[in-house]
Length: 510
Image (cartoon, rainbow, N blue to C red):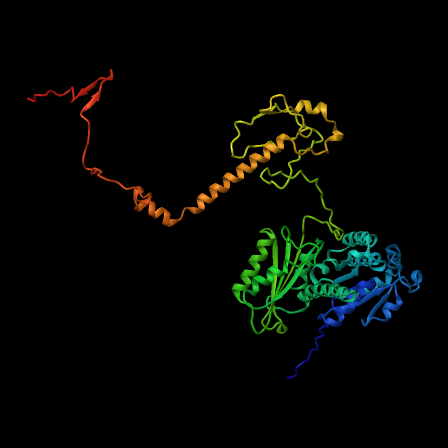
């Protein structure tokens, strides 16, 4: 009996289905950094108009665009020149992307020439080849100038029209988080953020998990989704699950960290082999994400083991499908609304300051004259209408009656002009009288305060237990006892006559 042997030709995939293309100087620097980090099963490509920058890169796959247009000298910070360079090398780009590529990350630093102009063209070619296209770009620092920020905003708008989803990372946020860094360290931080974003998304697909998330799951979430929100955090220790979810959604490096209103969410949870994820922790994370996104959001999650995490867990959240599709750069100075300062309230008990009443621009309707009788003044504070606008200071002229002070507001309009409203009248009889009343009021309050402070617990106890005549040292002699009644038998009639005994009782009782 003979056996026939069959040879099965199982195709092996030599190249990755995921490519990361760095466009321009900023994008190429980011890809150089990513290549050193070792993202699993991802092919890196640097694309530039500057031949010298391409030569210094350690990435093996290089594409020089616009050879005839730029002659390898760069785009000169002109986005239109970068765009024309990409159009010139259109066929080379199509050939690069046509080799079994299913997903492409396009990284660029917006605001320059090659990255701003060429990245949208490369994204458009990828979309024509039905490749899932994700843009991960940085917005310039504020010190790079308004012109560069405006160019970056236009470039992000063009890129968004040709990508399935776009992640915008604001470089200026790095100053808020890491402080005043040297220039090279600041740009290195930006490269590291780009790496984290690309690595988090790519390894969701390339790393096999216990609850696996495949390429089609990622495509479902990111296809034609517009602006995206991505966050990743690694934590360990007590309450690590909830802390990881909270930190993943509160990353200040992304343009939008609020996932409420997202239609689809991709959730990846990785734990170390020393402390695997527990069921309660998984429930905490998923419920927290669902609560923040809303009940209508579709959450696709995966879980795997990464031995390098040890006792930590890593949570990565990608939210897409927002109703709002605005990708803007807000790195300029915040405009502050200023309001005119209102007049401060005058305290009439502040004796160190003079009471000054100024005329308002639009004086209120004059009130009736107020008469203040001096002879009836009491030591208590009197109300002074300091808040009522007066058209002019109090005049120095005293009325005919010396005992009364009359404030005639109508006459003040005739005597004083608006130019004289700034003058301060001092040492008038009204002010002297007011100061005297204030002084008397303060003295009265001080006396009451001293009387209150002199009453102690011992004094109160003495008043309750010791009779008043003993406390005042009064000697009493031959005082009848309180039980002895000394009631007079005489009464007064209505006519003021003195009557003896009770007239209603008869002397002879039956």
